[in-house]
Length: 588
Image (tube, rainbow, N blue to C red; front, side, top):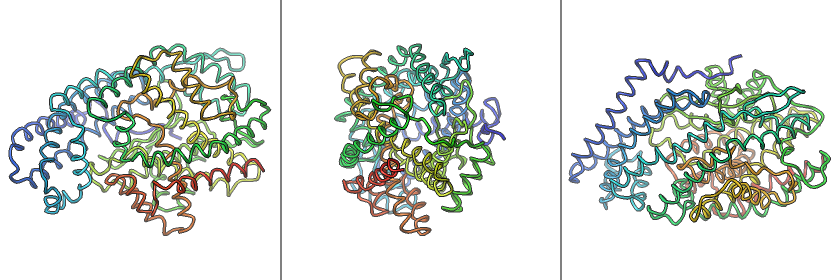
């Protein structure tokens, strides 16, 4: 069975006429937008027509640029040394900076209208983009002048984006020296990290030790990349007038501080329950001082749940279809049309992600499938992301862009469907293994994510004064893990290099890419509870919620399901669902 994705639906190749023609069109559109802005924003006459024209040009450019960029990015994701793909990405990023100046000019021109609502009411296209236009107005508070915006956009390409590419190359090509069955091997990092799920305890520990040792090869370079990126973010947030990178992130996430505070307050209250689970797992595995990091993902139970890729497909499609035919058909289509690259191999990046390609109304999913039950839930998770894109495919390109926290809603919901389905079909021993696997995942999303938030927040504070050394970053990661995990983990076996293997730290455009996962899990838990109450009536409401995520802030999205994100009780109740599972696990 084919475990590699097809990209021909985007382009046959970089050398194809279709790709070359679209590159030409893309660059012509950049020139067209620049020229149009230069000659049409001197007056407010014909304002409705002018706003419509600019939106149409943005939509046209967004569709073609994203199609070109995704093709190059996806190619590079499975072939880290593909120089042509890297060159295309850099060329597109460089050319796109030419839109910084016209975009600033348009936003500032738009902000002059005190009667914007009246103008919007005169046009169906503007009504459709009301949220987008109002967000433009709000952004003017943090805009610099045109020349400064262009300078920042261009310097990012040789600054943070260059550092990000370097770290991606380092981690995706890192080979780990490890002895397997008496044979010395050099294996890709992604394969060695997947050994954390092996049944054999000696392999888990050996992989952990080999992994940590391997990071020494790229630690200094990764630290330089991290310092460069975080330093740039701090500088930019200051000159724009944000109080901190966190405030900048929350605004970009369409999320408010009150929501974040309520969520983290509830999370901190719940940490003792998660530590109780970790200590119980440690006890089962024969550890006395808490769980060592290399056994965080150790499978429990006598039955080792293994799936072929075909079995995983069938299980996902069958159970997605029970929730709704549309979700099941989406997954079936994704598998049959080769939207998924599931085979681990050298040069391919680790982990998993989903790219929703709005221009062709399809998605592409990367995973590293080894047959574990965790790999099945990962596939379900990424297919959930894809389904989110499916629900947005009839929106315009501008209304299809949703913020990070809500991005995890459909994915975790889909994952929950599969876990609950597996529990229903499982024997008692299998149910124990599945429940533990789910708790293991929830612990990562709540406890480990909290440690990552603490780490990144402290990195930003310290980076204002100095560059952080490898030793300082390692110690800071250890301190953050101890604060989050407490006595749940064995302090002699933590993971000081977690800051290297998590790519989320290395994007200047997505800072604090940690709390969105916790938001997604707990928001999805709340939604799933509503689904259990409403049954099939919930499905169209869920689809409508997903379709609205590109044109609402998070508080308003949640209100569609009568959820108050500022309510501490909402977050507590979602966490209580996990705490009940912890008690069930301890008593099994």
